[in-house]
Length: 135
Image (cartoon, rainbow, N blue to C red):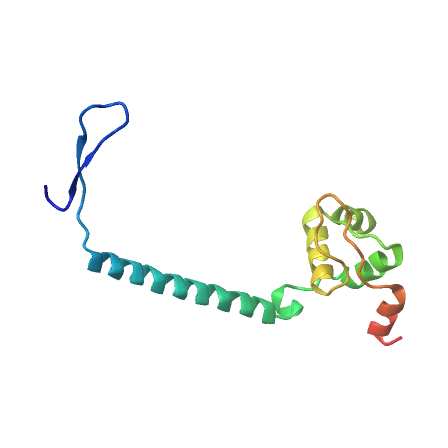
């Protein structure tokens, strides 16, 4: 037999089956593994740089600030509740716009992250909001 052949004895058969495959030397396996490792490092570094760049963006660079944002901040802090449907009802806007406002509130640390069907937690009090605004 050559290096790329083997006999496989399946359960329940008396005679083994001859199987042919491709022979790959140990050196070639090492070269392939090293190549894959190098590519993975490049991918990880690239992904880390993307994440760092995203974090470094200020909210104004990330997206346009909605004209209702300040009013939405007042609303959710005073009423102590925040959800896209709540913003939709109060400002008479569509879901997409309300969801963007919710995202902007989260980016600014006004509300907490999404928790399934529950309304988001309001993370600051009225007093903290007044302090932030310098009142």
